[in-house]
Amino acid sequence: MVHTPEKVRLRREVTVWGSFCWGYADVGADVYVALGLVMAAAQGATPLAFAIAGIVYIFVGLAYTEMASAYPIAGGGQYFTLRGLGDFWGLVAGAALMLDYTVDVALFAMASAGYINFFFPAAREFAINIGPFQHVNLIWLAETLVLIAFLTVLNIKGIRESSLFNEVLGALDMLMEASIIVIGFAFAWRPELFLHQWHNEFPTVKQLIYAVTIAVISYVGLESVSQAAQETVRPATVIPRTSLALIVIVLMFALAFPTVSLGIVPWQEIAAREGDPVAHLASKLPYIGFLAGPMAAVLAATIVLISANTGVMGSSRLAYSMAELGLISDWLSHVHPKFRTPVRSIVFFSAVAAVQAIFAFFSGRKAMETMANMYAFGAMLAYFLSTTALVALRIKEPHTPRPYKVPFNIRVGEMEIPVLGILAVIGTFLMVVAVLWTHEIARILGPLWVAAWVAYYAWYRYRTGKPIFGNLPRNWDEEQLAILADTGEWELYERFRIELERRKRRRVEAK
Image 1 (cartoon, rainbow, N blue to C red):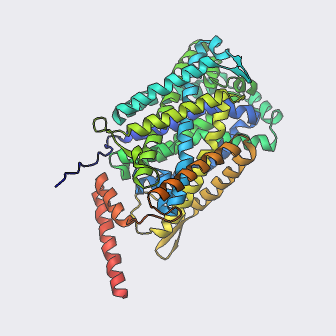
Image 2 (image 1 turned 135 degrees about the vertical axis):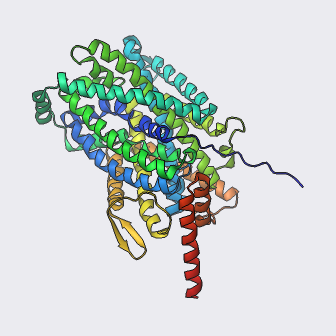
Image 3 (image 1 turned 30 degrees about the vertical axis):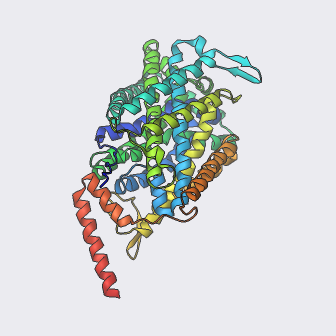
């Protein structure tokens, strides 16, 4: 008899604070990148752009809180979409999220290097012409690639070390962000300057919509909490606490930063500092600006680096989930027997991120703006499919235990239709339309990226004898029991088992 070794699985080691920091590292760091890019488009209306994007973020955040706590398994929005809408749409959601994660790695490694260059103006301003490519900053590009390589090694070593990295720096960053906002409002904020820019420096409607689609990247991070769910201890309890706290804290920071900025400096100053807008803002604080600027640059460099770190983690766990579900090759789902991490997917998608960084610097545009364009497309497409899946899962699986439910529901028989979930579907759909309308790069490269994944999916499923547009046979009830057992949520497990037996008896009696 041939002994088949047990497949090596991901280990559960992420705690409440670790889960919070995974999300905060991705969401909380985004304002460091988005502030300058959004202000360049929204000008005096920058707080309004962040507020509109924040409304969509609240709806999406509540939807993700419900689904991640009910289905705590690696894959996040891709898994929710596959379970709610089927294999093909699960693949499309996975492609959109993979674009997001790889761009996340490139964009935030780039931003980290930008904040490092706060101390080296010559490196920040360096540019050369290489044939048809104009104003290429090879120093900034080299720094970005080195940081991507560092994060690749860190994630291969393991989730425990990677999560600890997030936790320490996340705490320091929250303290730094709060200090800038409090000191800025208390000692430097001038309401007359804010009102002047609000009234006299207002953008066109198209500029504002474009700014809203960029501001969305300040809120793209709850997916990271979902991706780490399979490695989170007691996720049914931890994830609702983590996600709801993130929604409140990140929304406050995202609205406070542009508001305090416009009351301290003209919007043009922040917009001109693509690589280090928050450090420039901190340097303008009275009395402590000479010290606050460098401190903000150091901490900003670290927090955006851990956001890039969550991108490496997210892309590898997403690939692991997609391979497990039969959407892509099993080769990427291999977990290293020593490190217990998906080494192949970490290396492969980190390499994709490196290629994207090179493309951004040679694109002929501002490198960070190029990446932000792609980031917004992937996020909104994935969020649209995920929120649609929430509504579908409420209808298809009304008996599944949900430790947290999106508020405001309409009961129809056994089902509860989520009103805010429907608003999330509408809001994310409108955001997808807005991205395609206002983003020249995203409207071309985004659909091409998804089309390439669909082509690979069709080839892989055909080659392996799986249905291309149909679904693989799955027993979701049995899988849900296995998930609850694996997470140690025994109370939910027993409740769900009893419910399944009750439904089985009802079917027998009906016959």
